[in-house]
Image (cartoon, rainbow, N blue to C red; front, side, top):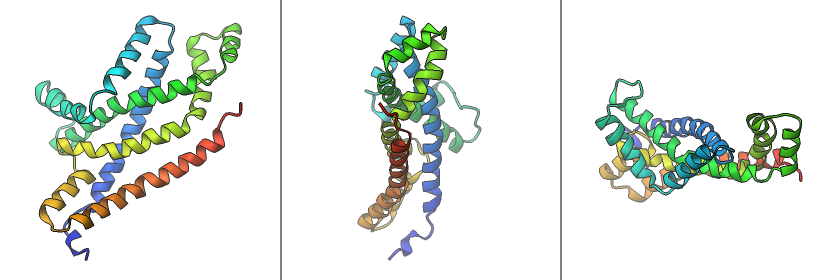
Length: 221
């Protein structure tokens, strides 16, 4: 029944999906944290930039962002991100697009966690001489991260599924292989089930593990 799978690198395609997810998750966490810091910053210009970025980017379809990285950055502006071959360039551009998009949701999740930190703790930190950056790094963000492990897990699961959009610029991940197999084989239902199970195997353990972590690190109020 599964003889048609011979000749297709199924595990390799899902490995590319995992790589897209991991690199994009790390980049999104870093950039999303910086955006969250901007959104609560006392500097109006930084607050304005953070607010504008989040409101604009999260309302643009991810497909548009991914295609723009290829047509706009690479083909028009010759931005190759230090890569030489077309395959690597597309992979890195896809990661950049996923980071740009997902970081807006990471920012909002973190900002909701920042809002759970009692104002009295912030005032106490300022009273002992800590500046905004020190207060954010030492007092606010550690508690905010502990409060939003659950929401961040949802963002990570959504990111894993969003990696399928990278197929639009030719990244050889699971969705691109699925499309190729559907075009070549007369096994539409079976192929769909195989890839659905593959994504469940990626996302379900992640959700369960991070749900357990969220309970363990939750801040007691």
